[in-house]
Image 1: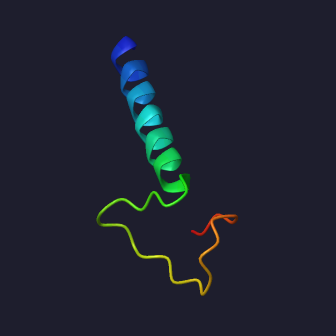
Image 2 (image 1 turned 135 degrees about the horizontal axis):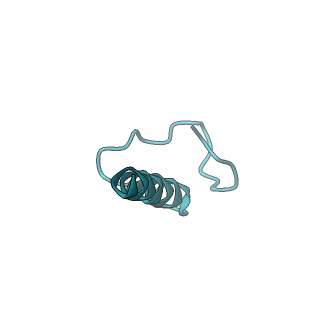
Length: 47
């Protein structure tokens, strides 16, 4: 049971890290899709 909880915590931390990296201004990681929404503003979250 401890193993399952540890695995779940690691997955949650990884998901949080990816979410934070995607939402940093200008934080486009290599391999991500380029932002082609027509404007260069970082005010909105683009999925």
